[in-house]
Structure formats: structure tokens, C-alpha cells
Length: 414
Image (cartoon, rainbow, N blue to C red; front, side, top):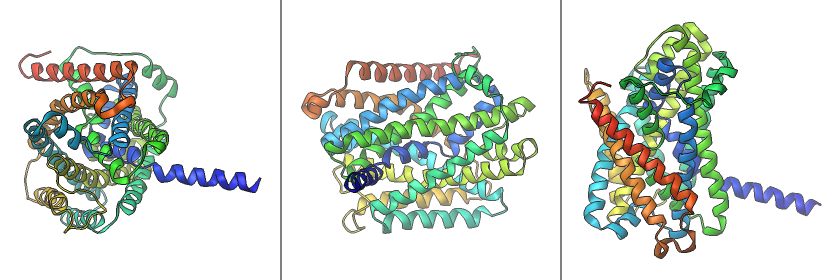
């Protein structure tokens, strides 16, 4: 009996040792830009887009599972596989666009750090350099296991949005009814908001970071069932957080007719509507989410670029062993933090432009992934099933269609 209990305990601890990359990857997607998007969706359209979020969750789970499967079967990152399959020129193009897009997101995340701390009276000239230094030291001086533990700890900050949503006292019957009732308004505002919600949920950096982190963690094919659990749990947990952000702002700001353009505006607007604690929780959540993403996205970029060109990469290496990896990471952190500190600088146009680039890049990266995972020479018997291919190709087609609508809306008033 004792032996059986001991074995169960060992199995539980082993599962927890595997879990990590999936949860971290998706939660990093709920960054300052993501929180702003979800809060704006709830404030502007109430519960009308919850059905879309539900569909995106299943697509995200399928895509993340493909990533993790490629990682454990090949032992290689996504950029490495793209270079081997498609050649250097296409890989260089993908890495260049990825760098530009990710750098814009990093700027948004450091802006989120600044804004969240200013809600509590801390100047950006104190908070941003301090957080940038802590993030840099964590990654450059730590091992993968230590870095992952810190990242996992930051995922708990997203519980603040769950608490905020319950404090807002929504009508849950209306919430769940909206999840099962597709609503589409044929106007540019609604369609662009829907595109933004999808774009911030399924992003290019996720695919590169997830696969590289699984390789870095050295998870083997025999342990794949546990990693699959991790990515499924991550997809549903990450979008559950998004769900509660939308519910929170829909139940308060939408009801009161208050429109917002940033996450910090949402936090301030919640104060008189949902109380001091809701304001505090929303602000703390913004800070934690921004810090997590400001660490993850530069790391994702470094992984991808180094893998693409065959350079050593990984948190477990020293600076001397992987100079390119740590130099790229350091440059993104330093430049991202410095630009936020320039007095009077307007970053909105730059951030919006890079988000659009990321949206255009996403279906390209997903197409690379689908082709790779259906290559029997690479994957052997672990290629996609017909159902997985249908879901993944429909997702790509849907994102491309929405991107075309986004492009067309620049010229035609819907």
C-alpha cells in the first residue's frame, strides 16, 4: 500500500516537472497589448465576442500540440526545422519580420510595466530600468529550471483577473448564453476588434518559444503525453484569463458606456465601478503580465534567430558558450527599456505597425508548421491526423481572410 502511494507521489512530481512550457507560452501572450485588447473588447462590445474566443481556444490547443510534438520527435526548434526544409533565404525573411514584430511587442510590454507602476505612484524612470535589470540577470545568470520556476510563479498573477471578474458581478446566464451564440456586426470597429482578439491569442512568437523551450528542457517522446497535457492546459488556462478580462470590463465599463484605449485606463475606470480591490487586482495583473512577456518575447526571438543560423542557444549555456543568443536577448531588453524612457515619445504608431506585421506573419509561420509536421521524413509516424490538418488549415485560412479584411478596411469604409 505504501509502495503504491509512494509511486503515485513520484508520478505526480514527475508530471509537474514536465509541465511548464505550455502554460508559460500562452500566459506570456496575455501581455500589456493582449490585456488592452481584451479589456477594449469587453468595454466596447460586452459579451458579443465570447463565442469567438471559445473557437480560438480549440484552434490554439491544436496548434500548440503540433509545436510540442515536433519538439519531442525531432529535438529541434521551429526555426531550425524551417531552415532545413525551406532554405536560408525564406528563413532569413521570417526571422527579420519576427524580430521587428517582437521588438514592437516588447516596447508595449515595457510600456505596460511603466503604466502599471504609475497606477501605484512609482515613476517609470525607476520601475522600467529596475525590471529590465532583474529580467536580464534572471535569464543570463540562471539555469533553465530556475528561469522556468520564476516564469511559472508569474502565471499565478493572472488569478487577479478572475477575482476582478467576480467582483464585477456579471449576469452569468447572459455570459454563457453569449458564448454559444455567434454574433457578427458588419462594421469596421467590430471586425477590427475581432481580428485584434485573434491576433493577440495566436501569435508567431508563441510557436518559436514553445518548441525551443521544450527542446531546451530535453523532454523525450516517452514523456510526450505529459507535455501534451501541459499545452492543452496552457491553451485553456490562457484563454480562460482572457475570458475573465472580457467579462470584467463588459460587466462594468460596457454597462456604464465607458470606452477605453489602454489597460491602465481600464484599471482606473474599474475603481469607481467595481471598487478599490478590483482596481488593485487589475493593476497588479497588468504589471505581472507585462514583466512575464517582457522576459519571454526577447527570449523567443533569441531562440528563433540563433536556431535559424545554427548558433548555440539556450539558457543553460554561459555567455561565452552562446554569445549570439545572449547578445540578441540583451539588446532587445536594453533598447526596449531605453525607448520607453525617452520623454514625450509616442510609441502607438510603431506598436500598431508591428502588431500588423505579426498578424501577417502568423499564417506564414503556421503554414511552415503544417507542412513540416506532415513530412514523414521529419516526423515519421507522428504526422498530423486528418482532423488536426482540417482544424489547422481552417485556422490559417480564417486568419488570412481576416488579415485581408483588415487590409481592405484601410481603403473601404465597412
